[in-house]
Length: 621
Image (cartoon, rainbow, N blue to C red; front, side, top):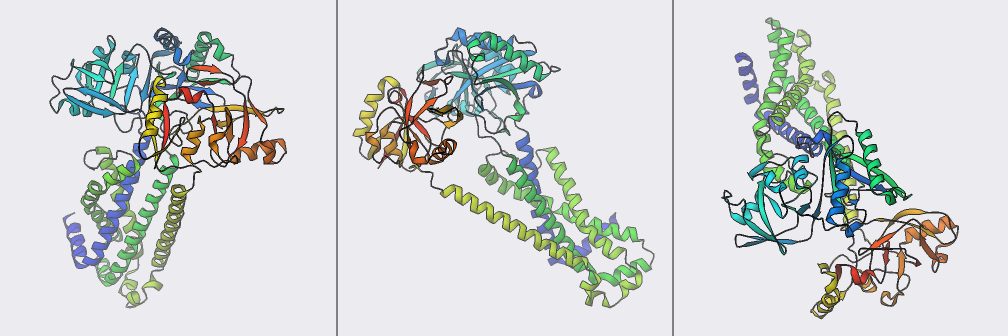
């Protein structure tokens, strides 16, 4: 080993330029590989930190052709605290279910006050099953007890960051103190570590209340370890059907399903998701990019090593003539490659510390910025370095160590390098092919990102602000907004491009074709003006109410079904499916409306919504 180290070090110092180039190449290749492996591991690790992750499932309601991550109550937001508890108890008592928790989260800005400090937060979680919330999920406790949170109501769990913001770094006396959230007072029951980044749900404050102030809840169940999830799903659906027969009789209802908690992050197309889901395509792209970079690194090292070692043909021939075994000479080449790759690891650690925080910020992930904190990642990186060094140096070992002695002493070895070593030509060509391929893919991805970023969405995005108000104060609030300088228009209704909305089942009059692919948005005429939507009607302030606008794509689809020109749809009646109920502001009623055309997004406006909505799009000058 000592002799091999001396030979390797002499080779490195004798050809410093080639050594530095190879070292940099290996460093970049290993850094990219580390980033890709860590990113894929992070994406696949979502919610695996929960102790019972393999037996915890989210309850999903399938309605129309859309899965909902929020399970509605039988009486929607009119459900009492007793009725909300009855629904969750029905799930708990289903055969195969160990426990069930329900909660809601709010992204609305809320002020938390304690210890003379007032902090704004957006991640407030409310649960009326505090005991199950702490047993189904696994949170790392710092202060207090989960039992204290489960006992009684108006208790609160703080994350460590929120607790430090309120009480400073000394949290020993924070438990049992009172704080104010919005207009209500709570008692601190526990302080936990910050919710991990690889959690599909996030909160800074968790409060316990008797009733959830919402039309539904996010329901999670823990089943028996050996239970069949499909059988448990059938039991849950049977229990729900007995508790809510009206829902079971709805032909648009497609029953509930259990979704593994560890599969939530990579499952798209779920309405009202807590976080934007992950994308498997990103994992594939980043993984393929890392493979390409590693291949380029391998070919680059092999090409440079082959070029420099070909100058040492006579010394290699001399070693073989003096009795050195072919296997030992080949092993020396591989050893030098592996050793140089291991020398690159400290440089990789420096790149990780400097660049990974930027990557985390860009991708919204939590890849470790210190390669030495995770033993598995460090071991993977070391093994990858050994593999990359061995493969890249094996080209040289095969090409030179196994050559006959006479050919190594031949003077034509250096002058006819490309003729004697045609493998170098393949290596160079392969490098160029990979580089051209990566450049082409990067170009198309860049163009696609640019297209998405600059595409005209059909409505005004700049200068639009959203404000919240209670339904009772809407009229006064809107009047005060109109009096503020710089505000051009105050409208009432939904926000574009921020939140998902329910699908609508609809059909044209005198037609049996039923569609369930519309997304409903509620706007009044002033909101149309605030968004700058262009319609075939011109002035949107004088539209009849109630009315419906659809986008041109929807119009073309309906016209194709009817076999008529698009223009002939104007004035026709569009009816909801007879089993479709549209719910607004706590009341449920059937709708009938007149169809118009617009070249923007699909939405529905009603006069009633302008009296009950609590969100206003405001156009600012």
